[in-house]
Each structure stands twice: as C-alpha cells, then as structure tokens.
Image (cartoon, rainbow over all chains, first blue to last red; front, top):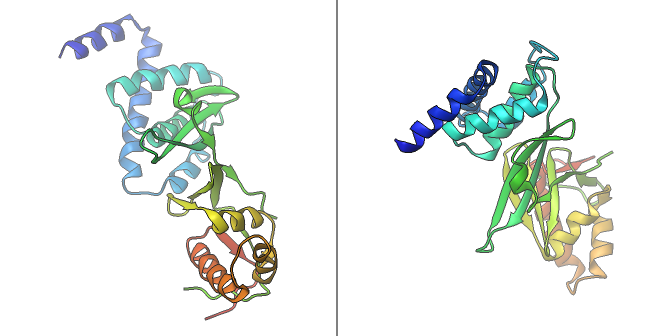
Length: 142
Length: 98
C-alpha cells in the first residue's frame, strides 16, 4: 500500500502529457502480455508495422522509453512483453523499433534469455540487462 | 522425420537467431519461440551450415575433425538435420520425400 501511495505521488508530479503517455504505455503492456499468452511473438511483432502513425513527431523515442518504464512500475512484465509494447507504442508515433535477442549464463549455469529494444540508437526497454547478454544473430542465408 | 538426401544443400534458415555461448551454440527458433542448444560436433555442424552444404560435404569436413566412422557420422547428421528441418531451423534446397 505504501509503495502504491508513493507511485501515486510520483505520478502527480508528472505533466499531463507524461501521464497520458504512461497510461498509453500501460495499455500496450497489458495488451502485449495478454496477446503473447495466445499468439506467437513473430505474428504480433509484424503487426506493429501495420499500425498507422498517429502523431509522427509528437513523441520522441526517449519519451516513449520513459513512459514504458513508468508503466512497468505499475505492471511488471517479462522483457518480451515490454519489447512488443515498445514496438506498438512507438509505431503509433512513427518510430521504428529494433528488437534484439540475447542470452547469458545464469549463476546456476542455466541459460537466461533476454529481449531488448532500441529506436534510432536510443535504448527503449531492457537495456540494463542487455549488457550481460551475447546477442543472437540472424544467419545471412542466401 | 524428414528424410534429407545426401546431395541436397542445407543451410541455417532465416527463421532463427543464433549465437555461441562458451562451447555451445544457442539457437532461438522464431517459429516456435523455443531455444535450442548444440554442442560438440553439433555446434561445429551449425557453424558450417552458415553457408549451404550438402550432407556429403558435412561428412567430409567433420570426419577429419571428430573420431567417428563416416557411416555413423552420416546417419547422425541426417537425423539431426532432419530434426532441425522439422523445427524450421534449417532450409533444404532439395529435400527428398520420405
């Protein structure tokens, strides 16, 4: 309850625009988490390209990243859900998002997989954990 | 399981992402979103499959690197490549029907 109160206080400090964007990001997080339970990521990911940009220059990638970070405090979700939400949210503002996948060895020797996103070189989601990862690369198949 | 002819060209498909982690190759299948691991001769085979190769070529190359009979190698490679093909991790130019 205390942390929720703190969250509500910090939300009040945000501008109306930041609050609106954080709410929009939360909506995409809810949708991505729910969708990924039923539909393969590959299918959902390709749908981002079909979203029509709403206000192409209205929101920067940095603002989108901040909104997703704030929404993630309310609804912590897995990295793949965050990556998908980033694709959808930023596609609405005309930004392409590059999704990277990587793996690293966990402390118990198990394989830990991670997804993170960049938009025009700006880290959007999952950047902190990405430092420990070895990126997975596509094969340059003919 | 899919049967692949010795002369068919096999290559890592576009429906996967992979990397090397220690001695292991980690492959993320984009069709099923499952991570697969290969080590030893399997990892070396994956390395070779970054460019198209026939099973016969793979046997020639790997038999010089691993202590195994050509017959055993060919049979194991055919089984592994067939399994990878079923998962969409490799593309086969001319797969022979069963």
